[in-house]
Image 1: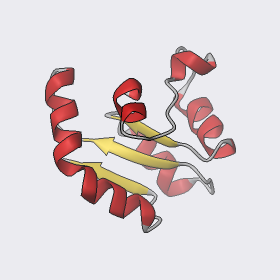
Image 2: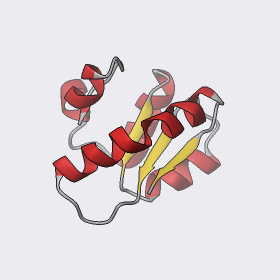
Image 3: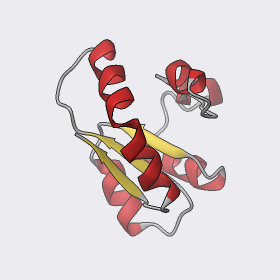
Image 4: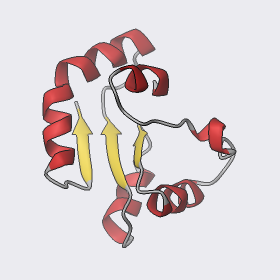
Length: 97
């Protein structure tokens, strides 16, 4: 997904690219906060981190159920204007449904 978002002009990094592929959610969230990143995940645990932690990180919560990458990318493309508007407004959590 990070390659897709980069192609749309977003500055993206996959957790594997920064050595966090086996890191805990809290370690990933800490990294995201330190680097003012947006975490994109289906993992609801990040929702609790976004609500409880004082952090500059934000969370794009993917709630599409089980789907393959092409379906996920299609949904992101369809919802992109709303996602961008929510992030530009400073929303800390954006749900992708």
